[in-house]
Structures are given as C-alpha cells and as structure tokens.
Length: 346
Image 1 (tube, rainbow, N blue to C red):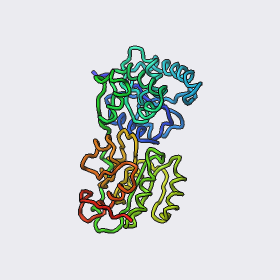
Image 2 (spheres, helix red, strand yellow):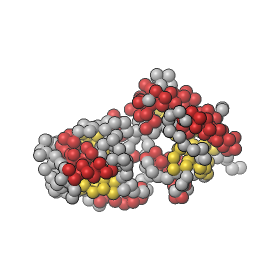
Image 3 (tube, rainbow, N blue to C red):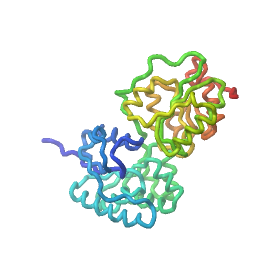
Image 4 (cartoon, one colour):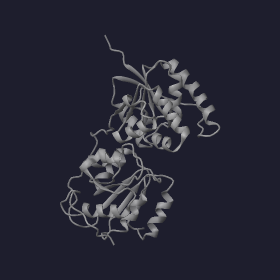
C-alpha cells in the first residue's frame, strides 16, 4: 500500500525565478522533500529550471498593488483567488512565506481550518518595524499560525517583540542551509602578503551597504581588488563612488549571476566581504562562500554573528575603517582570517 503524500500549499508573490535568497531557499527546501507534494503560487514569467522543485506551480492572476488606498481591495481580491485554489488543491497544511505580506494575508484569511506555518524571511520584519500597517499584517498572520519559523534566534526575538510576546511559544528557529553536493572548495588557500581578490554578492541597496566595501578599499595600503556581483537601485551610485575614490581599476561590477555560475566563480577569489548594516535574516551567501573555502569578513550583526561565530572576521557594520582593519588581518600570511589586526590604513 502506497502512503499518501503530505500536500503542502505555499508561494511567494513574485516572479517565479531564483532572484533572491528567499526564492533560492524555497527552491532548495521543497526540492529536497520528496515525501511531500508541493503546490507553489508565484508570478509569471517562470524560470523553467527553478520550477522543477515543485510538483505544481500556479501563476497568480490578481494584479499586484502596493500599500496604499488600493491595498485592502487588492488583498481581498487575492484572498478570493487563493480561496478558490485551496478548495481545489485541498492542502494538508499551508506554509505562509513572509509574515504579513499580501499572499500570507490571503492564506490566513482563506485557510479555514487548515494549519498554517508562517516562515519569516527578514524583509517582512524590517517593514513591520517601520510601518504600523505592515506590523498589523504581521500580527494577523502570526495570530493565525500554528508555528512561526525564523532562521536565527535574533530574528525570532524581533518577531517576538513586534507581536507583543503573545506568540513566544509558537516561535521556533530553523537555520537555513544550502546543498553541498555542487560546492567546489579552492585547491589551495591564498598565500603571501600581496593584495587580496575580494568578492561581494548581493542586492545593491542601502541596507546591503556595498559602499562600505568600496570605501574600505580606499583606506588600505594594499591595492586589493573587489568584484561586486549583483543588481539593484544603487548600482550607478556605487560605480560613480568607485570612480570618485580613484578605484576605477580596482572595483569591478558584474550583474546578478545564477547560483551555478556564482558557485563556479567563488573559488577564484581570496575573501568574501559581507556588508549588510541593518537586518539580515540569514545571509545564504555567507555559507555559500564558506562552502567554497573563502574566509569571510562580515558586518557584526546579531543574526550574522549567530551563523558564523568565530568562523569569520567581524567588523563594525557600516564602518569602512573597521572593515579595512579586518582586511589587513585577512591578508596576513597563514592567519586564515584569525590573526591579530592593526590600524594600517592610509
């Protein structure tokens, strides 16, 4: 007798492609659980390779609308679409990705007696800390959920505070991870005291603070090189900043890369530089870099510290001088990122 698969309904209300850490995570997660049947709700266009992780992928048809006067009618319409899908799919459980975002609200209002597990991703918590309406949405989803999952205790505590500690017993911490089968560690660690080949990968926005890496480069005696991989609203500003700092030949910009291509390139660098200065839910790219044998200089945020601990070199978030000091230590012979550092910037 064949056991019946657990039927899970989930989704993220954006283009169904590996465009962010969260989208990559869900692709890895549900692709690694053959014992469940997963229906994923997303948006067109669909990346065909990414789609393979799910048993069924359904494109939502309700037109997205931002927070404002049209948001409540939008969520009502989306809830109607989701309710019809729930009646058809008959899931055993719903995984609501992003607490308080529109699709999670629709899941919450349409679920009926179906249990919900809410999964936090970071941006949902950030906006709830800034906006009363977003905070209200987060609380609505939290109240309707049987469990609330966060990847670090630091993020779980922020959710606990935002919800007035009413759902502490529902919070659980499950760290994110990556598949290691395709990771390729560099053949040999970097040697010598010459300049480092640094890499930074991520969305180019204010919170990711890529500018900290560029400014730090200008403060070091060694002519380190930095490759920035990613897209975002600050790309042009960062390129101009590199020129202003006299780093045109030492800072190189590449667009967002699919994971396979990023992983192929990571072993070619000496050090990964992580520059987020505000909230970071987990930072998959941190463990991607480590899986490929790269030491990591990281902004010393609570969640990141929880992930890396003594395995990376911390510096003060948003402080290029502090990062410059960390790079000095990483460039010393045989220290593996753990030798003492000193202020030898220009």
